[in-house]
Length: 434
Image (tube, rainbow, N blue to C red; front, side, top):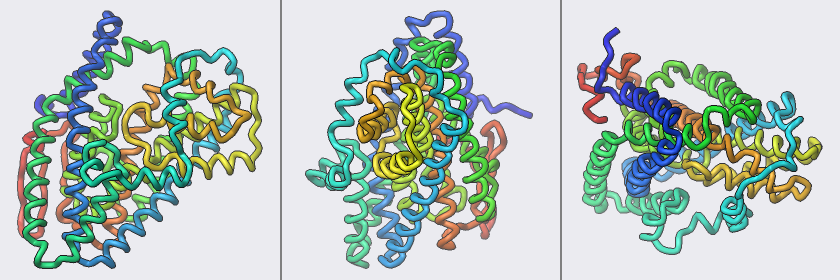
């Protein structure tokens, strides 16, 4: 099997291996490498808002039919709620069966959690959630970096533009061209991704060390196992029902998975996922509406992490939550998990907000998770990425907006790809867009 040294997968893997070795021999310098990852994530976040805005507007306006927009949006939200509930249930089930917090001395928790509790105190109630969706200004939604306000103004703008009919065609054409420009910017930024992966892994190993997994290894292992069960069984069953293989789909998006693994941010892969899903066969309009929305409403990995970590902290402090309280926990998490950003630390803040609802569980117990949160952040980001990709394919198939003749097949090392069309066959080098 020929290795493509120019492929993103190969470069990111090599960068991560080098990062681990560098941090093992030079831990202090490795911990200082975080800035390399921060630069990449900041550059990606710089263009996330305009890409989401343009993608949703073009998707909605391109449909033209508002009934269709409402139908797709409704199906997507219903799907998100059902699948998110399964994710939360798996987290609660694993915590109850395996008791990861039992035997852990919660009172020994130490660490500065003030930035998380302070962020959590800013409001996670129903009205706070609604008010955060509506931005203070139209332009502010695009500059502040929060996903929900961008979704809100994009849906409004898309619906208004679709309502203009032919009069809005010029604006729609302009937005499509602007979208191409921003995706070209993504391709330029992606050249830097192996360096970012090196920096992120060096920081993680240098600051926490591989040994940091030992003290909380049970929780980490169970969380990853829960996410694997969710992906293989739940998402696998859904994929099989809709006629595609979850394993083959994961293989297809492996470049994006390795990118998320290196940067610990699912947002870093969002622009490329838009392109990949369109190449896979999903219609541009469905991808534009479903995928960005999923980043706020379909955080499967985050849900598993939140449910399991909340019960872990309770068990560590010897607090026995009844099944009624755990059902309440599930309901609270259904609210607090919505809108959590796909970057490192967001799940931690949401966990602090969730535990604040249960006075018997000390919020300071989240300090127990400080050492291992970075690792679990990566796991939940990857699960979120896969979950949103599957959701987009499923909704496309529900709406008969999936063209199986456009499925792109890639080799296992990210080499050349072939995109099949009804009218013929188009060959292209996948690495050209890296």
